[in-house]
Length: 189
Length: 412
Image (cartoon, rainbow over all chains, first blue to last red; front, side, top):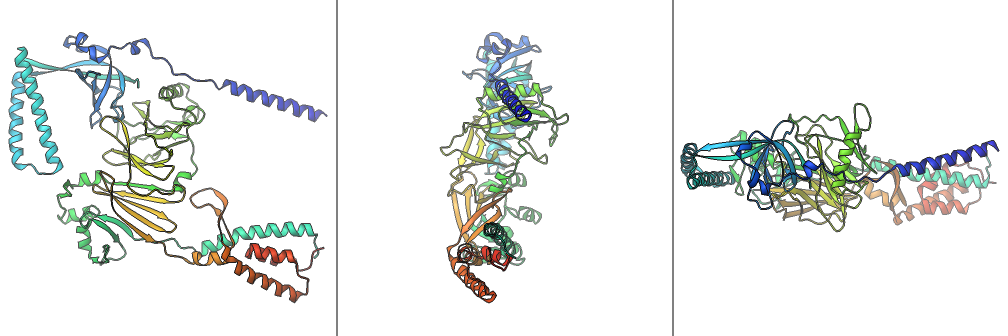
């Protein structure tokens, strides 16, 4: 009789334990983002608040990754209008950016950097490029690398031309580009 | 010795069952010889599938029409296979099919994938090492953590064997944010530490959605691939290329194969291989790819199919079928064993008896055995037992040998 009673008590305890463990299996929900990240300024509005005077300062920006470099060491951030693009460089504890990040919306925190190109520097680089294109025209092979190299030189020349044109039209002595040294980032979706 | 009738039946059944399993297994081991097929690859120069036999030192290459080629001709006709030899002799062409063929280009497009049911069904630890996809040092794949995706996401510290609450919370949050539904049906990735790079794992969640999971800069990265298929995904077979452009091969439940890549906009892309469907549970597939063509070899019981696909569009260029040569086992098993039960199921690492075939032709051999039993019993002068004869007629050699093991005297 004692044995029967002890078996019944043991089975009741087991059922109770199992039911408790089932209740303990709670439903998890997605943690909400901190306010600073959720309300980070969007890159499309950057023209109104971001300028070279903020160089060296820590900023927080919300943007979409348009492309990741082949070396994974930098990526290009852009907004929905694609009018503003900022280069994001890996630095500190960030070793690089995975290529699957392309198309993802991210909030980035980092130090703003400015790179300045003088007009004389741009013009000398343009003449070097033209020489390279001229030499390459006679030596280029009709394979895929030849075509790739040729188109790369031309796209670089086009960018240099645009920079010089902008300097001339705005009557400046230099062309500056902004980039961010990434310290941390959060993938939103 | 006289034994009770009920014990006699039990003993007869038990011994008969053991013999029915063990004898075909032993005969299979003794008489089965694996199929030997030549290496069939696509020649970028001949633009057809050719046979390569490395044991023939003089004429290793044979084309579709049976014409044999010498070793130096073989080198020139298969430049993407023998590029090292051609480069050493300074005979390597600078381009093939308008594609540059220096060492870097050739090596970076090479691919090798093996798909078989045995690899898919092999027992897994269910704990997957967490590798950093962007390590500070190349080839640095030491890991401190493993993760599990059962009823919940869990991250464990290998050194302490303890559950890491903080990392688990971050990982679970990342999965829930991407609408991952537990438990995972499978998680597949390259867990080997001897690899050139790591791209994480592919996992099918409870709802059949395919996710890409990896660790980047010490944080989990989870993304829904949005790759969908009406029949669902059977398995994923990882591979690595030096260009880091192919994740691996996806196999659908209806036996179609697809190459998984990432397009310029960052979207996952599954490109179907232009070839007939395979049987995911029985066929073995070997893919050897280069810059020009992918050679897909499908091994089936009836023979080996080889398909050459263009490396870029994965469209069919050529195909060939080599029928299987029948070995001694194939010739004898259908005449001797009415039931073939193997201890280990082909395509699995688990030991589980499985009925492989039922051979009706073996009835003639069973009749011969029944006659032999009749003659033997007549010699001993014991009356004929019809149940013994019937069991020999149905179960054949198993029942016959069981009779031989049982006592000669009659039952009570």
